[in-house]
Image (cartoon, rainbow over all chains, first blue to last red; front, side, top):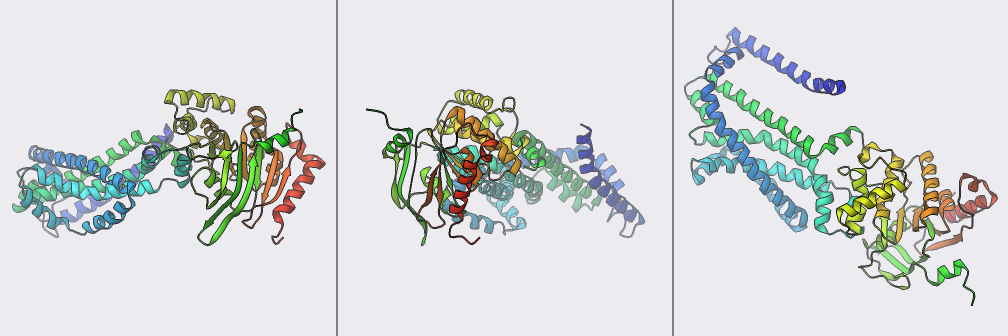
Length: 260
Length: 263
């Protein structure tokens, strides 16, 4: 147990120390007033302004969370279905993957207003955008994960007379889960940004709307407060993936630690 | 009429017989006219250098690869694709890390024998007890030593309930000490169970210790350089290997194995 505490501390202390250091540097530099306190407010003012405006921040955070979660759910369902099809068919994989990779070159900045034009100002375009942006890393994580299945394991299953579905469920899918969680985490870092971008392009509420409003009235402190909130949201979701991973594939971390 | 001696009877109706087996990968012939047979309850080893087509033979027997020519007879009649009489044990244990030890063993029964999960689990439990692995069923593979993992892998192979075990260098990745320990363990458990076994190895001592009969495969694809009965009394132990008979056999097999190779 104490080993576990030590491990967690070893994981947490360095980044927290670095953040504190950066925060302190920001605070000191901003207090020096080189850029003007309204242009670059000290961290302490960002925090207190954000706290004072917490009701509005919370109101605008909620739709963003919903967009991210629903967008993610949609993305997961599609990504899994597509990944199964890609795994089942070599021709599908060879034709779809390059197109999918190519699609990633379309910048979010261009895509967001277009999708708002096509789908209106409601929830739909936000969910589509979040789903689009997170889809790719999840699919790649799954497809690479399937491919990481041990050859001998598949051969063994075939000698036992297993068909495609049994091999997929017993070998390929479990083998893919570690890669899937990696893809999931990469996708997550994009998800909140995508939702904010979609709100930028047109929405009633949301962190994006909040940032836009604060920025238009030169409230840099509130802009930065909203940025901090979105960072905390992403980090919380990120941490949640580790929790889910622990529950879903407990064998993975354990067997890696055992060096097997 | 007096019954024929055991060896002759084995030849009359082998459990599995391979004749004229040929396989090429592109222009490269790997097997060309290979013939061998294994009687029911017989432990037969194939000794051969790497790349002599031993593993290709197993791939063909298990239906992973298709032979270019030749026939495989099961109890005297041609092998049908639906027969699947072979249970294959790969060199690396290939235990699934997401399954417990018991679940890994029961996989053999679930997939190969099509047993309901509960029945496969009961069979797995019984096998683990037989294999000296009682109490390890709930563990994960990574918690076991290399030797124990190999035993679990053999249990999974037996759990398939197939007639003939194909063991593909099962102890090849173990350290020398563990390997000897497992060879002696396999000899003891085989005494008891008398499975029909075809073992691939390049360990001459292993072949002598375990086998009723040994084939030495040549470097060339045209098959068997030597076929040798191992008439050492069982049960065999480390003492068996000390005897003059065993030493003579080891030497003969070693010479055959190295024939035509630079020494």
